[in-house]
Image 1 (cartoon, one colour):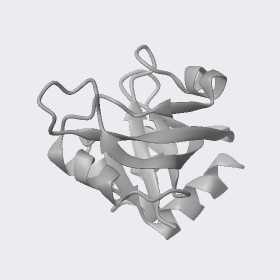
Image 2 (cartoon, one colour; image 1 turned 30 degrees about the vertical axis):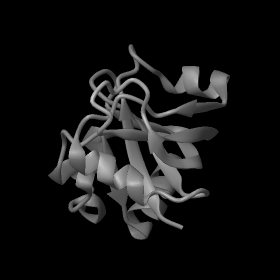
Image 3 (tube, one colour; image 1 turned 180 degrees about the vertical axis):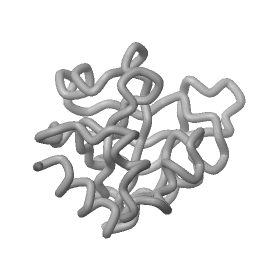
Image 4 (spheres, one colour; image 1 turned 30 degrees about the horizontal axis):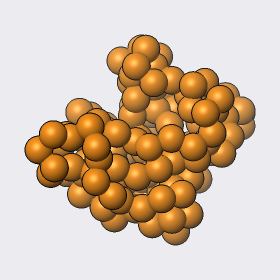
Length: 135
């Protein structure tokens, strides 16, 4: 199993909306690297839900329930999407400020490629963030 982070602006699509809906396609990704990351996702992989722009914090955990397929919102036909199921909220959100100040997370893609909307998370980063969320 691999781990990921997917960003959404909460005024466009929030964690609370995703929880309420349950399963939702992750549409609108128009960056080739982010799209390639979604192509790598397998059913059962887990992803953090990150509120970007407003909040700037990891708030929940999602699971890939449908692998990469064409995104009908892309008129060019170049990009695709995956479906994520909301799994659970973090006990405590982990903020971007905390991530930036934590030496164990200094190489996290979220920091190195801050504009990337879908990124890989290492197993050690995943486990560390889970620990931080339970403090």
